[in-house]
Amino acid sequence: MSSTGNINGWCANIIYWFDEVSERAGGVQTETLRQILVQNFEAEYLNKWLKGANIQEMDANALESLYTSVVPLVSHADLESYIQRIADGEKEPLLTQEPIKFLSLSSGTSEGRQKLVPFTQHSSKTTLQIFKLGAAYRSRAYPAREGGRNLEFIYSSKGFMRTRGGIRVGTATAHYYASDEFKLKQEETKSFTCSPEAVISSGDYKQSTYCHLLLGIHFSDQVEFVTSTFAYSIVQAFSTFEEIWKEITNDIKEGKLSSRVSIQSARDAVLDIVFRPNRNLATRIQSICEELEKNDWFGVIQKLWPNAKYVYSIMTGAMLPYLTKLRHYAGDLPLVSGDYGSTESWIGVNLDPFSPPEKVTFAVVPTFSYFEFIPLHRQILGSNSAAADDFIEDNPVPLSQVKIGQEYEIVLTTFTGLYRCRLGDVVEIAGFHKNTPKLNFICRRKLILTVNIDKNTEKDLQLVVDKGSRILKKSRAELVDFTSHANVSNQPGHYVIYWEIKGDAEDRLIEECCDEMDASFVDHGYVVSRKCNTIGPLELCIVERGTFNKIMENFIANGASLSQFKTPRCTNNPALLTILSLYTVKRFHSTAYGP
Ligand code: AMP
Image (cartoon, rainbow, N blue to C red; front, side, top):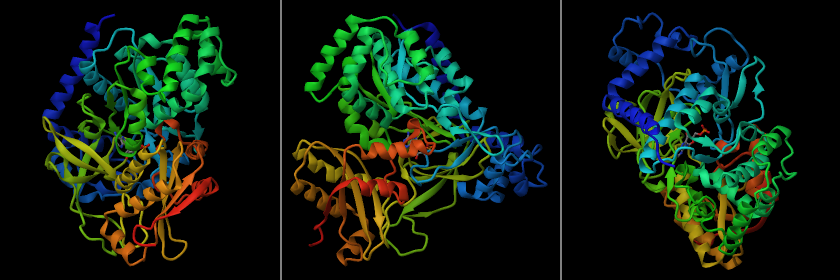
């Protein structure tokens, strides 16, 4: 098989298009804002701020100045009453001129509660567009073969919920997988997923994962790359594979499907494909897996899919903790970091597939939304301010005025009816592609751990956990997942970190990990408070194997999708705390600041 002229054709076109809009990024942004406002200025929310302005006649620059001076910066909570009215079925244009027919549930795992965000065909179109753009750059780096397939660990929901007003509700990924754009993606990029629609939308992630793996093996020679939205899903799938590979091999050998898959539509769809016994393939897979089992499954992806060129998924931000395991499963296959976006809007594309996930940047696509950037300056000393934030902010600037090395919070104005809405993500400007900025994802802005004057973000916690878990390497144990909680129910309050580990480690070693983490928080407020004991010793709780699966299942039971799931790195959610406390098997208290 060879790469085709056709593939080169669409790749070249979209790369040319992106270079062109990046060259004119500032002007394209102003024009994008004009389009959003012209389309929607009669909707109630915008009309409230822009009433009387002659939007149609105004030039784009004047409109940008007017808009940013009269429409306030908001957070999602400020728009919730409008979104609720849409959900209740109000017919008047509230946020957009066109009626909103779908609402997306953002994973909301960072805030512990899911948010509803408008979703329109524009959302699916931009998903298709960013996919094609990323795919074009990947195909240049790793030319694709005609007839190739992708092994995609993707999950939609079975049917959709409806609000009281009849609006369809699902995750953004579920809406997208059900859209024409998802089918178009496969046809236009000649890149077909191994699993049919009935598997993706079975609604039961365990059954879907089984089918994805089985079909991936069925198509093993054709698989070009292995992918998921967030890296967590790939790690999850291969830890399942370690347990069930014999059953899958048996299905391949006999041309049947395990009774684990009980959803009829998924069964029928899989059996339509895997209906002939394939003893040769089964024997090959069996001998590969027997070898892999002896080596703790190092390189399983590379071994099972000999023609796969890379593993592709979002590996940055909250996914960094899964990189070690992902690298282990990938073996020598390169890891290519996926693009940057949110339920609210896609933001940036990874233009350099060779860049390791730790260094990846995302070039902002200036046609997707109107982006503003709030400059953030880190406070050196902790303060007891009511704002309880770790940054001082300046006024937002447009995309054309961002500066390399500066950190910003992203603000979105979208085609789907969000106006100057803070996303809550902190990014740093790493450079430019033509005139559009390339962003480094830094962290979610929200402070996650705070007892009094201390302020630690998700990223701070991640660094601390990295340091602590390095000590585990002295044993045969490894960290599977973690979360945390600021426990202020007793005085002094203290941090609790929950670890799920695989393998055995002596208590003495875990005590060392606990001390190391306590001593590794560099936030001045934390250090001072620990020294004078206004924050108590850090507590490390070891939870039973499988606890984090239970947490994920709890989210899924509440409407989240595995495709968008991110383990909350800090939680106050009572249901989660109950699970964590129920399955805690050991507790350790730090002596880093004295006994
Ligand atoms: P959701 O709430 O499910 O829409 O998830 C969106 C959030 O996931 C973003 O606001 C980011 O915090 C995070 N995210 C999405 N893409 C990336 C990425 N490539 N790198 C790091 N974090 C990301």
